[in-house]
Image (cartoon, rainbow, N blue to C red; front, top):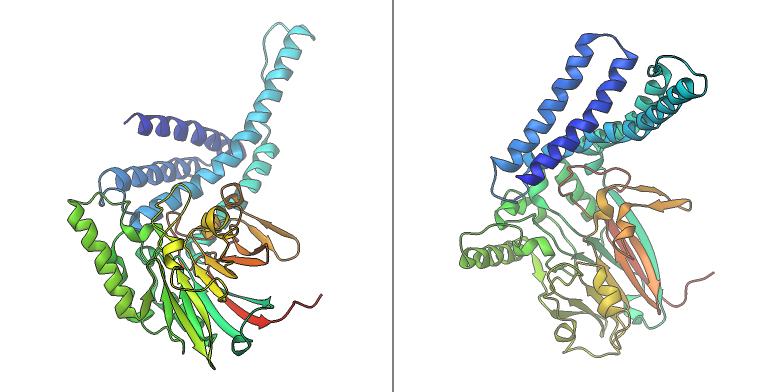
Length: 408
């Protein structure tokens, strides 16, 4: 209850600044009432969704949209506050100067300047429009990202081998079947040799995947489809009635993955063979700093040779620094996801690559290299919490393996 009271107080204070800006630039009372009405509806819906409806911490689409609209509305006020607060400080200093230096009899505080509020609202419109776009368009703005990686010890038979990675489906957030079917078709159009899925098929419950099972069953690759579990797949964010119910949920999800056609790797490996040569696909359960650590890399690699060419699937990229990159087994390519690139950022190839995710993860999106090994952190197929994406678009990764040294 205390947290809600603090939240409402902060919300009211921030909204008050936004209301001041609206009143300064227009005298139309209907606009004032509209702003206040939106403020009440947004916060009211958010409180209802997170206190009255739903199943505990389960993130339903309704909850996600409640959070998304709150974030969008608050983005306006969060931009306005520092600008208008700065103006208030200047107004206050001016009035004190007028009173004590100029020696006016009465304290006079100048009114807000209209053009300051107009500038503030103009700036605030940028994140407001971006977040709305991200909710209604950006979250399904699928991108295919192609990489070519060179390895001197790649088996000759796998020179030119193509793999497609998808990650973080989060099926419980989907609300547009046509867009998801388009994305699945886009994966198939890449005609890769193998499809690798690096975890978080659902938000919380196996049942979230049932409406999408047929759609994802259409994923095809001649050498198969392999998967691992992500932190959301274990059902840890649900208040279950019993431990048996939670266990059954995970078993149901494993069965759904099997029915879709995924070979789920639970701290184990598979070999892909071609023309008498082979590469190892190693898959661990979730291992992440601050998250579940069921991944057992030693167990997963216990039946393969240190000389094998290895592709490791591990959901959380923090695993790479912690246990992988300095491992004596030398994992040539690691595939991860988990970060979503925070679903918000700015990426202009060759110019800028930024997201708040970089403050939490050393490897948060794209290809990284260390000690002759690579990791790709997929930006995610779906979305979670905020029901959108801004600047960090949903990703389908295609990686081509090449024999030899990359040419300068």
